[in-house]
Length: 323
Image (cartoon, rainbow, N blue to C red):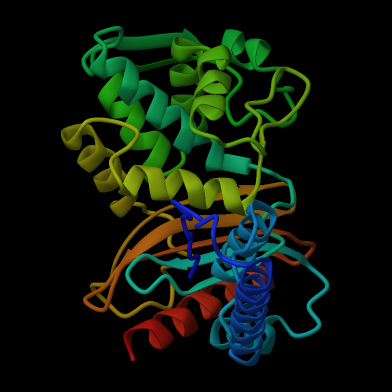
């Protein structure tokens, strides 16, 4: 508590001795008060009293750091499952009801694999909202031209001939629910890589890059979690389009990781990604005890084993949160 004492008037006729005594008593009281507050805060492990702007900044910083402290229970779950696993993981778990969190390598950069399709989806819906794209627009491109535009070699191409034709709505559904690559390429060509880069900057996904002809897109567990949180909070699109995006994610057909071991009828909206040793899954689980975000990115030489680890972590986290 800070006390401000205003001296409106000092009587000139008081003796200098009385003035000195009064001043001395005042100083002693202030020192005693300050020492008492300091000791009380120290004993309660609350830090120093806010006696200066610097102290206030320090206290706020400590509070922020404490808010990011890992849950010991979640940490134990992760450690018990991964143990000495030599594969490389990035993990974010965030209970949106209780605030309980766990972070591990959350800022490490991974090849995004198919998680970039989340960004494409969001940008497409934003362009639908502003009238620049219609869900009924027909997207069509020769496969050879698509492969060339996105620098896909003949050896690695899923398709080498023919024409891909889809309405925007169908392309969105295929891109998210079965992670169809050519639907994603059609949509990405329609909106442009610059639009994706602008989206990442606008929404603070600073560790993610859209990539180009020579560099794959990249992301982090923290950015993936931030995207999902903003989608969940309705910050990326209108209420109607937010629900549509979440419904697409709820209809995910690739269920070998986060959703694999969850109880039947558990609602989870998620997107997977697999590419050249990278295996990811990012989503939000809905439960009566509170919804929570779970993101697990990995680089592995043993994808089947890693996918099992992701599935096991997901189930253990679920059981912990609903107990």
